[in-house]
Length: 416
Image (tube, rainbow, N blue to C red):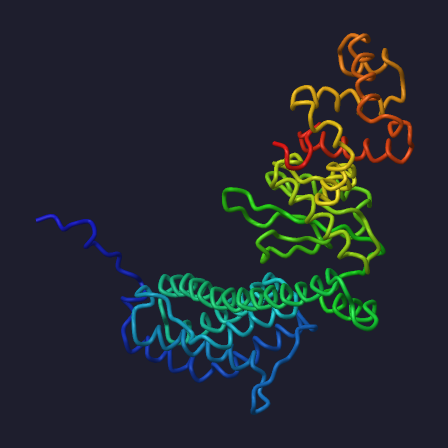
């Protein structure tokens, strides 16, 4: 009967080595493990003299303990089982701590992995010498090399876990400190000297204090999205329902283009550039713009700059005041009817804006000049001498411009 392919196993050369030779190999390797560990550590220090030295409670280098323990675990695995039966595992601790130390020190894992490979090469030389002494066949020793590099992968995995833990902890701490900095920056009122507190908090995250900032408020896309890659130096807090960002030196070369690319797919508004201590003012305008976007009074679907929509922000924000002014200024239109009142309002606004005669107003409205003359006579009848008063003309233009932005030109509050 032909065996099922899954049941077929490949016999290793190491498995064929007599157990007495394996035990002799392991006994010598265990006896020489302390000396081998010290040799490996000396070579590491020679190649990497700037590596920090960490001691345990007894004053012994943690690196020496880890190397010695790694050798012992590997040899024990070879002695008591076939090396092909799974990979030996060093108890988590030392090598995970090595990775954690690299992460907290702001270094990459590249040098650590190079050190591990150096350790495996030096260990292999010693094991090859021991193998010759106890007459281990070459094929078995070749398998031992492969086993050593598989074992190395396990050590690297532990270090990567430690490195990832340190990176996550550092990222979380940085976010916490960044949030505290942004809270202080965006506070409406400051106690004491804000510059001193800002300097201290900014230094903790390595943020250079700019002369000017612009504050942005974002609207989350309908679909879940990752935080936009706004670039180094821009403070971004995604914890708010409407994420906030602080853009240093917003007019610096390349900054607008970078933000445009990073914020593709997002909507929101970026407030005007202001001195650093006035960041709350920029936030206030950005929030106002976002509010108008949500009401459909400013274009949605992109990130707007408040400085490009000044008229809308100035005229649409004080809504109650503008409505009260409209109630008084547009009272003469109350009895004209909605359609006729809107046409008179359009004509009045065009006349106020052009400061011209019937032909100029007619060209703007796309109607016959005679029609404009007729409407202007009606306007003078409705407002009388007030229409020539500079203050009243300014109020009328203010109200009518605001209504045009809202799409309610000619309406008076209370009349649909």
